Amino acid sequence: MFTNKNTMGVKALFTVLVLVVLTLTPSAGRAEEDLRIPHLSGHQFTTNTLTGDPFVNTYIRNTLGMGQSIDLFVPLIEIGNPPEKVGLTGDLLKAILEFEYQQAVKDWVAFRVQVRVTGRLGTGAQSLLASGVTANTGFEFGWLFKLAEGEKTALSGTLNVWNNSVTVVDFLGFVDGIVNPPIPPLVKNVPTTRGGGGLRYAWAASDLVGFIFKGETGMGESIDRSKNSDEWFFNFAAATDFDLKTKTPVPLGLALGYKFDTFPEGGEDLADAKHDLVFRISYTGTTDFLLSLDFNYGWFKLKDRDKATKFTSILLNLRYYF
Image 1 (cartoon, rainbow, N blue to C red):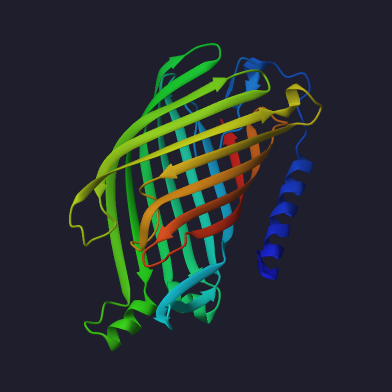
Image 2: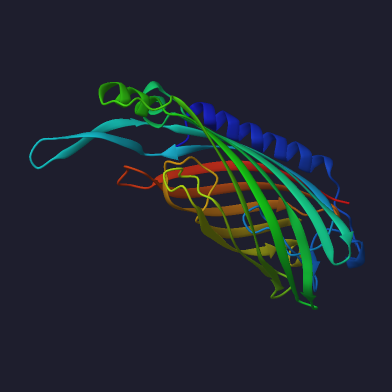
């Protein structure tokens, strides 16, 4: 559950959302050819950060958010017969900042660049000792190619390069190393570079309902330096969205998405793939600007943990199409 401090932060994001929406005036009777926001056959897509979209256009996006773990427990020792695990409990706080720019070079190809900064740390002494501090700086650039586009569908291919730098402050490992040498470094930095590509697909099932799919694969450096080799990775994401203004006077778009990623941006303590769910609410009353609020739920497995670590987060997204 969110703490009082995080609840205040959520209220602040809602306040910003309301104030910005109140300053925007819906464009009455706008023609579809004037609409810069991605659309097909009368349906306006509520794109999200998990799936992206296959449309070759020019835009700038900024995302700011925060999240918190749910029921975090870090096992330390086993006592008793039958053995019972004893450990530390607490909360982890996650901060997220993203910036993305895409430029349409031609009507069939676009160049894009994205910077992502995330941080994960304990909110109290117990969780800070147990999980330390993880900071990730990610840089991504690539190309988006239009492969096919019809009245209701669009298909594009991507070529990308990902560069991530993960810095980990491992308090628990350092203390354990003092008791059981050798002593590992307190602060570790793990850079990784990967390359690959994939496909993005959009389908306007009706003026109300649309679907977006994404699949990517590639190869690059493992975030676990004990492997000392490159490895393959892949991710898959899908989302469905609803353009409410086609059926009601309300200029809102809703989206529900899921992503599975075998190489998430995190520390080397990750033991398995990461799963994410997102529910997005977007204001769609203009032809070139989207204001969105995301509610995310994610879970992933950490090494030496029996249960998956779960996170809830809220993000404010601003996207402008040129």
